[in-house]
Every structure is written in structure tokens, then in C-alpha cells.
Length: 177
Image (cartoon, rainbow, N blue to C red; front, top):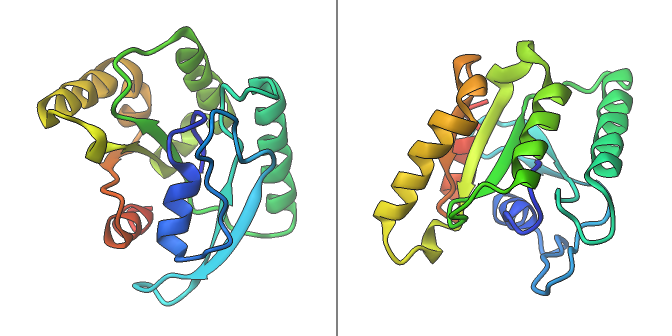
């Protein structure tokens, strides 16, 4: 699970797993400093799922390059251990009214990390819908994200999902992989 700091990655994992051991940041500092894995049972497909909760981009203590290097190293080790990666969830706050240069650069780095052949295993997950005063603004933001920023991925088979901060919503997204 990847995305910028504050997008709700740890919250997504906590809701999906029901684990009280997932630390969620509620301060201005990033809480996830290194990749944390959490195993749980998929309630619909009767198999185990391992979530890798990654540090967020735009972190206040580490550069995006350091974070991407850690993720790439973890992916390499996981692959060498014979573990099958089902996909990557890239979370994005729907409440963001602007795409900053940092966010655009992060998407470019993420695109390079994935490679064209893996786009069908990427799910863009918009979060924080419950914080919108007007859902129409979220729908407008989502359309612009799809058209301008996620388009290359979508043309390669990626999908966009809305996370509604519920167990059912989390597993609907996970099982789309």
C-alpha cells in the first residue's frame, strides 16, 4: 500500500485487518517510518493476505527516493522469497484540491517502479470521502485525477476505487486485484 503521507494507508490496513496493532498517525509527523507487514485472512477468498504498509511520500524525515528505494528492495526480497505480489494500492486523498509538483513526481517515480506491464495490478484508491462537505467536489477531483494523472495507468488496465472507510469497502478493493 503506497501513497503520500496522510492519505490513509495505515487506516486502510487497520480497517481491513481489524488489527489494533496498526499505528495510525494523528499528529503532523508521519507515523509509518519503515515498511510494516500485517497478515490476515481474506474473508471472501479463504486465503491469507499480507499487507505491506509503506512510509508515505512527502515524509518529513526521509526523502521520496529513500522511501522508493526501501520499497524496491522490499519488493525484490519478497520476489526472491517466492512470495506472490497480487498488486499495489496507491492511496490518494480526494480532499486534495491541487496536485503539487511533489505528488506529480511521486506518480512518475511510481510509474517507473511498476513498469508498464504491471499497471493492471495497480488500484488507485481515493480516500477521505467522508471529509468532503460536497461530494460533487470529490467527483470532480476524481474525474480530473483519472483524466490527467492516472490516465497512463488506466489505459494499462489499472482501476480507480473509492474507499468508504469500511471493512466491506476495503475488501471490495482488495478483491478487485
